[in-house]
Length: 202
Image 1 (cartoon, rainbow, N blue to C red):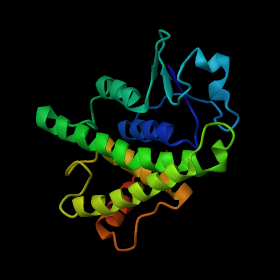
Image 2 (image 1 turned 30 degrees about the vertical axis):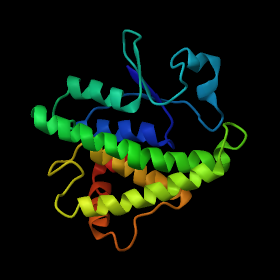
Image 3 (image 1 turned 180 degrees about the vertical axis):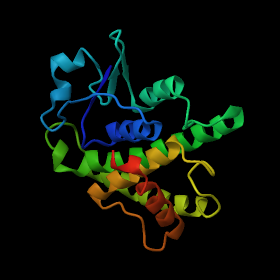
Image 4 (image 1 turned 45 degrees about the horizontal axis):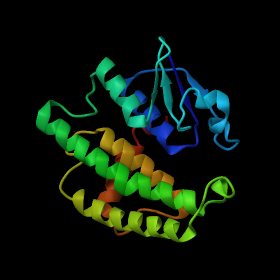
């Protein structure tokens, strides 16, 4: 078993944090996005979409998409539960995980993809859309600050995958100037708490 990943990319970081919270160690093999190694024929045989991370099981099965990889490890090691406990809690965690993915991580990534020189000449870039993504992310941080006024973590009183996705999305936002505002005290408190967890250094 091993995981193909790239240390500097946000989605592989999601899996590393998840594994650290679970206390699971899996060998990591770097696939350099900067040199487009993920677009080379040998890697496209592993994941035709070219994305990272990819979990390779001992039987040769390849599981791509970070949340799918995390779900595999949730099933193989249920404790601590990072996807919720029971029907209601699992649904709430899924709701917030999806919101953090669509409203925070996707927006910060969209800003980076469309404005950063990293992707210049490699993918079609629409600078105006990048600015739309940035403004949307900043608005969502304002919203998230109000949500965190009455609870400790994103989906409730327990740390979950929703916190991991939000942390990765917010941290990645710094690449294009998307930051927590000084007046966003609830969000700042939450960010400090989750960033101080040992897993955040993974």
